[in-house]
Image (tube, rainbow, N blue to C red):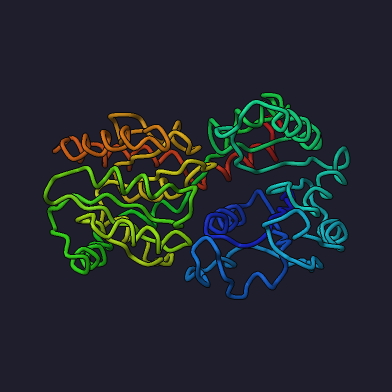
Amino acid sequence: MKKLAIITTHPIQYNAPFFKLLSAGNKVQARVFYTWGRAVLEKKYDPGFNKTIEWDIPLLEGYDYEFLENTSKDPGSHHFNGIINPAILTRINEFGPDVVLVYGWKFKSHLQVLRHYKNKKPVWFRGDSVLLNERPGFKSFVKGMVLNWVYKHIDVAFYAGTNNRIYFEKSGLQPAQLTAAPHAVENERFGNSPGRYREGAAGFREQLKIGSNDLVFLYAGKLIPTKDIGTLIKAFARIKKMGVHLVIVGNGPEEASLKAKMAVVSNLHFLDFQNQAIMPAVYHLCDIFVLPSVGETWGLSVNEAMAAGKAILVSDRCGCAIDLVKNGENGYIFKAGDEQDLFEKMLLLTETGSQLKQMQGNSFVMIGEYTFRKFAEAIENALYPIGE
């Protein structure tokens, strides 16, 4: 078995299942090096949700991992000097990997790893950056030069989707250096077979006084400016139909102002942040999931909603839109920040009738191509090229 050292900041619900799957086979001996340090396991205040968060699903089961000492005075993934690991090279070398896979480069120790192992061991990279909000100018030019320098240290990048691939190509990587590895979630956990989330979803509808046959639009996530919840609510307020609802699930710095300004909007409901174990039931309370962000590298909540069999409304500034949403097939893409376009697409979905059920089914089928297994196979195929 070939050894793979994985460098990432901290355990998250979108990586842990992949690490577990990768380690379950007989081709890869992986060890994950968490660079934030063991302090990351403590409950932490998340400014995006405006509350202290502790995930309620296991994130450290089924794979080999090690927490590295982080000596940063302000530890965290929010700035370059938040990740400083004096022993990182020593610990990686003691593991003796054949290949090093680094998640993200905008941290001091991660960049150190990229630079150190260049021409010593194959250096692989995982990131999901996109260019959807880039504007021509001097800053963009300088940024391009920096990215070209960074990615000269990388042998292979695993791209999450089309927009991410375009970003890597613009940053100097050649097609032969790029391998598809789709962004994924635990599709099976969000599915409803055999109706395991029906009771929970019905409970939410009862709590919010939403009829079982009413149509529900849902947003779930942080209430922060880049999510553009205000535009979503304004567009929804223009839908003058009985039995149509919008549910906003989450907390954040914009929560109070949104509730104050939108108190007069009928059939608008707010729910507090819901942890991972209950999120499948949250998706199953709705018919259509909406992600209105004006800036989103991907949008894994769209994967989750599709796995739950929901139609999708997503802005064109979300990295996943071009890959996951086909207009008229499983939902619609609208112009980010454009209230009129969003309103028209929402109104259209309230009039689709039986076609909405077909869209929901299409979502469920389409997301079946976006799995952790596909990512694991990409890693295995790169470790063991044809003919080796």
